[in-house]
Image 1 (cartoon, rainbow, N blue to C red):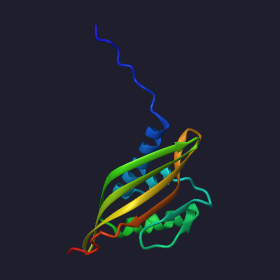
Image 2 (cartoon, one colour):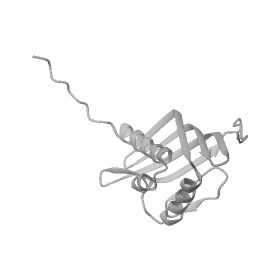
Image 3 (cartoon, one colour):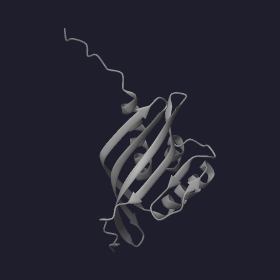
Image 4 (cartoon, rainbow, N blue to C red):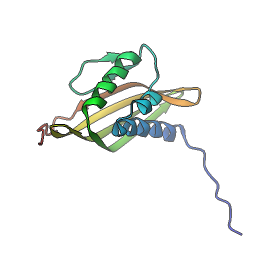
Length: 144
């Protein structure tokens, strides 16, 4: 008889890493419903995307994602350099993302440094702040 496998309980860092993965998976899927599920819906949450001003509050952030998704045909995100930290009910991830986007006129590729901050609410890690900045070495040429 085989020995039963003991499953270790995921650490808080594992849970925050998984929440970060869900955020980027929602982006790749161009899914507003999945994006809504990962974000807190508070008035004081914030989002900064490359080349855009700070957005505050779920309504404005939701509208931005809706606009982004409407203008894209496909997105691929490759994450590297995940650094995860958890302090009580707050966790954050710093990572590098290579983002390839396809749209009607061609495609674009960018490398960004992203920081995502999550809070633990009712057993779920929800995104309360997303900040992504282009890395200086990124080639910004649009290919058609």
